[in-house]
Image 1 (tube, rainbow, N blue to C red):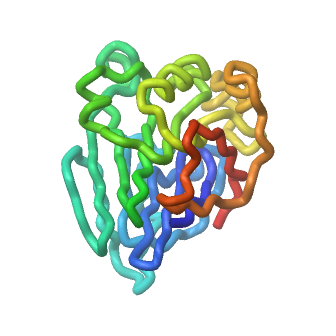
Image 2: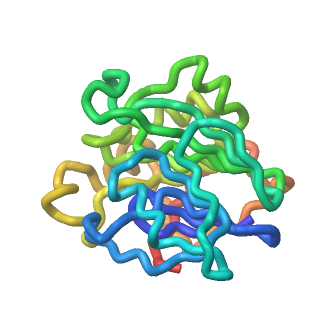
Length: 220
């Protein structure tokens, strides 16, 4: 499976059977997301920086399968599991609900935390299950901050941890002024790996201990 970072909280997962785009964003982020092709789109919550499904079509020009409700789904050999969570640490009272989606492709589980705003409950950890690759917000204010991200990493114990939803020079300065850059996460965790363009993941070659991978937010 190949994982590409599209910027902000958007990722593309691709194998020989199909493609999944997770949390596509609109232009209000400050980023420009080119039209994407995918068979499945997951949406963690209905905010414009996560639900721009109009940016995605199938390779044939049709409408992809859009998943925005918790539950279990399967298509084209791709399994998707959604677990309910919250966008804040007040059980959604401030910013509403959030969905955590785990995609299973080629035997590799990729968990996208959306705009998670709290430490997971034991029940949520159990329902999410084994995580090979964790896509986790680290910028704070709207989501987990660096310290919270490390705490959730310790809960889920992924083989690979990929940070997302941190401030970059491309972000809308007004909307995202309060989220931290990725350096805050580096300072909290203690390492600063060099970005790579994309990640090829094979179940048999996953690391034994959690590895931090930073994906260059190129637009593919």
